[in-house]
Image (cartoon, rainbow, N blue to C red):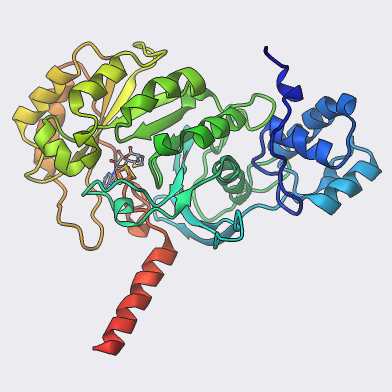
Length: 399
Ligand code: SAH
Ligand code: SF4
C-alpha cells in the first residue's frame, strides 16, 4: 500500500527545543503534528514553512507572516531556526572560504561535532564542498581526513545546514548583503552556490540514508532548489551502494580511482581489497542515468613516483573504455606528516596529454585554498588538531 508522502505515520519529529533547519517535508509535518496542528492543515503549513526556511532563509518564526500568530508563538515555544555555529572563517587569497562549523549535540552522549565546509568561487559558479561524516572510517593513505578517527555520521539536517550556513555567510538569501572581503560570483542567472560536491570529510556512501534524504531537501524546487545535475557525490568505491545512489538520489557520481592496478589501489584506497577495480568499474558501467551528457568523473590524485607514469595514463584510458567518463587529475595536496609528494608539473602535463589525446577533457584541477588547508584531502577538524597538540603538550610535559 502506498500512502501519500505527507500522511506517512511514525516519522520522528524534530525534538522540542531543536532547530527545524535542514528538516525534510516529512520531518516538518511530524513536528507540526507534535504541537497539535490538525492533519488537514499540515500540508499547507509545511508548504508555507518550507518557503520561509529554504527560499527566504528565515531566522525567526515571526518572519512567517502568512502563518497566524498563535501558531508562530507555538513554533517559537517548541522549536528554533538556529544554524550551527560558525567557529572560524578563513578566506584564501584566491577567494576560497573555509568554515569550521560546530554542530550542537544530537543526543546526551554526543559532544557536538565539528566539521569543515569549503566554498570555491569561480566566475560563473560557486561550489560548496560539504562533509558527510565527522572524520572517516576509511584510511586512504594520501588523505588527511583518513587519519582522523570517525566521530560519527552527520544527520540529514546537519548535511543540509552546511548549505544554509554557507548561504548565510555569503549573504545569499533574499534581503541579505554579500561580504566584501573576497570574490563571490553574481549576475544574471549566476548563483553564489550553484554546485555541491560531497568531497569534504567522510565517505558519503557509508552514510547513505542521510545523504539521500539531504539531497532530497537540497534539490527541492520550492526551496534551496539545486539541480541534481549540479550535485556530485564522490565515493572511494562503496560498490553495493553505487546503484542505489543513482536510483534513489539521482545525482552525478565521482569515483576516487587514483590507481589502475589493484595492488597499488589496495595501498592507496584500502577499500579496494573489498571492492576491486573490476567490480567498481562494472558498477560504473551500470550507474543509473549515466550517458555522454551525464558522465562519471574519475578522480586521480597525482602522487610523485607512485601512480604518475605514462604507462599508467595509457592503462587508465584502456580501463575506462566504454564508460562515459571525465577524468579529473588532482595535484596531491600535501599535509603535515604525509609520506607523499605531488608529481612534478611536467609529469602531470605528460599524463594529461595522454588522457587528452585519448579523447578525454582532462582538466588538471587547480588546487584552491591551499594556503588555508582547504584543498581536497586536507580537511581535518580543528578540534582533532587541538587535541593532538594538547596530547603533544602533555607528552612534552611528561618527558
Ligand atoms: N570519501 C570520498 C569523498 C571525500 S574525499 C572519496 O574518497 O571520494 C574527496 C576527494 O579528495 C577524493 O577524490 C579524494 O581521493 C581526494 N583527496 C583526498 N586526499 C587528497 C589529497 N591530499 N590531495 C588531493 N586529493 C585528495
Ligand atoms: Fe575517507 Fe575519502 Fe579520505 Fe579515503 S579519500 S579516507 S574515503 S575521505
